[in-house]
Image (cartoon, rainbow, N blue to C red):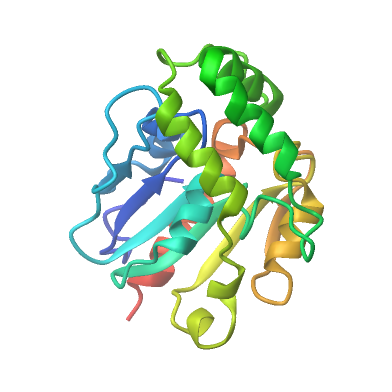
Length: 228
């Protein structure tokens, strides 16, 4: 769903990818949006990172998986809308959040990165639902940093009370058959805070498998943000 010149959407777009991917992950969605001023953060999993990339002003932020969690942890005062795709408010399990991924699973991946980072990435990408190889040699240090964030970070508090009231409008788009962020995890993290739009049969890579739905959700949020 491309934005036309008549659409009232003076905002820019800020895209944040997930673990084991690069900004190129967003290409199918960007192609459907047409001419939109876009800035993309790069965690540096396969090349130099660009963690300082930000739009210059008002923008809609879109995060996938890890990128969604990162956006909740790093809200911008210039963000006027947020779309979390295959996202979660917490990834790692805790005593009050058993729906998360067990600590031992995440730490097993961290140990694997020490010896065979490319294999760890390939296994994850395969489980997520993509058969194409990674875009380059894995940077173990950056991937390990991100796994530590996934293990420990908790954005649930950012959705509560005054903190939640200060956030821009948030939408969540999730896959009903996501093997990485299963429905129970998504529901537990966003319950009572943000309604979830489910894509029946969708997996963990909605921007690749359902780019039209993702682009439509982004275009809708940008149009809302552009209305007076």
